[in-house]
Image (cartoon, rainbow, N blue to C red; front, side):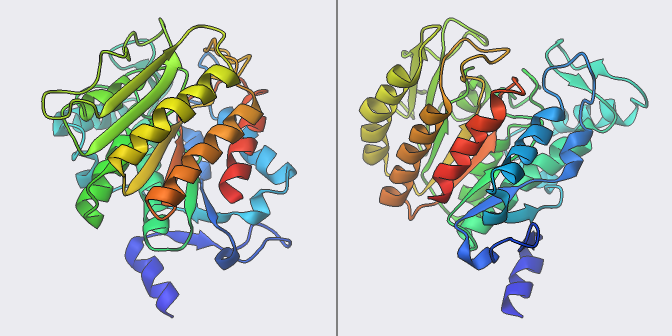
Length: 342
């Protein structure tokens, strides 16, 4: 009865089994946040950020047997008040109105890298709700960590406009949610997408309580993320960017995590870690030029998970960002989830 009451209060539905061989939820350390509703955004053949990205991830988790080891979470849409902790009300309303009047087909918002359909606003709000539900599950002790297989992605979204396939900044909203709902102060955001998370960095650039760490290809879209970008006057040293040359792989990237992220995280001492988990740094990705392998993603996950265990009671939530090769994406996500489950 107590468990049911807690779930009703958080608005989270935990599905304790994913089939006849599923392990009880209480025995699992990792949650999977996913809803078929996320497939309803941008089912446009000419796009690369497509519903099939999630379809191949879910298929791989089932085929590998990992699905039965995960606590499944289906979450309601986010309350808009949490989205407007990060984005302007004008931005939220502009997206809502654009989708409301778009009946068939699609259009672009501001630039050609943000396509929307009539369902985009609802799906984007639901994606935010999924990430917040993952945070709730970790904070309420239901699981140790969570992977949020949501779309659209978020880390390019700026306070007042969408960018780079991103409508709302899922990870940034989660960081503010942790601070204002749960009273946590220090949040570490680790971004391993091939593209620099310019939106996330901008939102927190002068905030000393959010440490942002990014490894990313450079020079490359969106042309931000240089080592000189260390934070504003009130937050100098809390933004750490590691640009990587085209072709960089496991060795160079893991060295950045061990030599730069680990000491920085220990000095900062976060109370929660969020990962912008982009898988477009994988070798062979359609929109990236780095060369990470599934083994590299597994080791990165282990490093970040180890920091969470050492510094913040294991509290860790990762959320899907990029990853556009339907061949490379599934094994890399599988490696990430395997490491989360260890």
